[in-house]
Image (cartoon, rainbow, N blue to C red; front, side, top):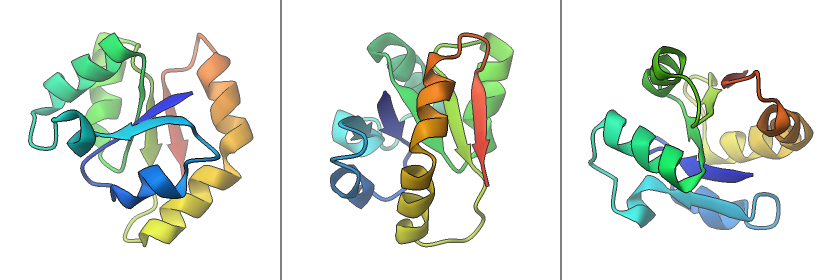
Length: 110
C-alpha cells in the first residue's frame, strides 16, 4: 500500500513508518507542499497512492469524483505525531483490507 501523507501530517512519519508502510511519501517530498487539494488528489491518483490526511477535503473529493485515490481520514483531533504513528501501525491490517476492497473509497480512523 502506497501512502501519501498530507501537509497537515509531519514529514517525520515517513521515516517512522519505514518498516510498516514501505511505499509511502509526503506531499513536501514530491513538491506538492503548497499545492491545491485537486493537484495533490490528481498526483495521488496518477501515482497509485492512498492519501492520508486529517482534513475532510480529500474525503469529499474522493466521494465526489470517486476513487482512485482512496483516502484515509484521520479523525484524531489535536494529537501528536506519535499518536498518528500509533494509530496507523495499529490499523495496518484494516488498512490492507481497505486497500484491497474495490468498493471502499474512504476509511476513517478514530
